[in-house]
Length: 251
Image: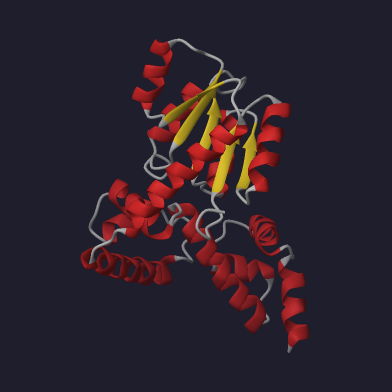
């Protein structure tokens, strides 16, 4: 935990023993740690939750660290996440190329886990300190944007095909600018913010109406009842029916 904040770290490493040891070590310091054995699985994890920092190997099967970094640097919602490379490659030219592609630091294997911990702490403290230096204008902009965005979302969340393009047009900005503001003010991406909003509306309908699961899914903009039920259970640890029964029992 850093200044009362439980930072999230994504470790991308194909060596099971190494990523398990790093996970165990970092969790001793109350960091939240997710692991992936390659870039493909790391991208899947990013779609579910955005970490504060990524620690990534370079040579991996499936998708290596170089390709993974190129992909996240090309996407507005992922680009702000700092990435530390950890590698056994000691070629200075390779290191310079990695920094040029967007990596923020390097760790040469083998390294002491404490070195990684200090780097993570320093980077996150720097980011949090920068984020905390906000002017009155910044705060006002956040309030205005979030109200505008949430007013549109309130009117549009039931639309199963709702996209960033739809909302960007209504707020009169580019899609990339919209994505940057969502990341800045919600610390998440468009898809996750919309999904959480829809789930919140679905919980209200389940607890306050007798509509079927199919109806609730359709009214809240989910593509199918089966998809809705799956992600609802992932979020609430209860199926929609179980959640309704639980709320009914509470009276």
